Image (cartoon, rainbow, N blue to C red; front, side):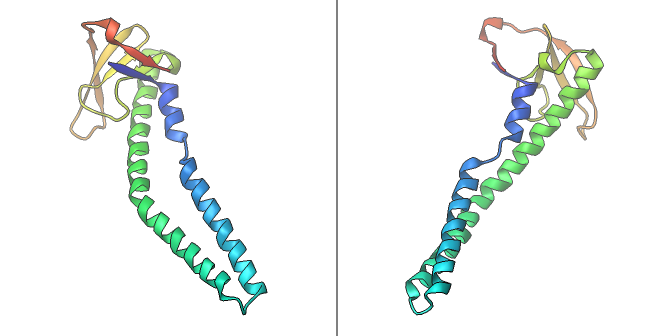
Length: 148
């Protein structure tokens, strides 16, 4: 069973998609360069054609990655809810956030929270507006992996 630290979940949630940014930046630079070359040499249509190809490449790249972007936003929202729960438990149990671990990055019924040396099972109401912590025991503690 893997438990993720508060810090790990926070950093994972803040990490941008560098590959997406890098590709868009490269395509944009290529579009600008081909646009400038076209305006310098208006009689040479190869630069205009290159600019059109780069515009279509940017549109295609955005279209392909839009679904991934929406999924990433959903994952970030779920992780933010888990971080809010962990902050609330930190205040309630008076335990520093660095000693909190969760076995799930999204709020799920029955998720486990490791607070210090204790383990708690989290139960939610129907609207996931309130929670109840029940002390839990781990059967085989040698199977626990802490991701800091």
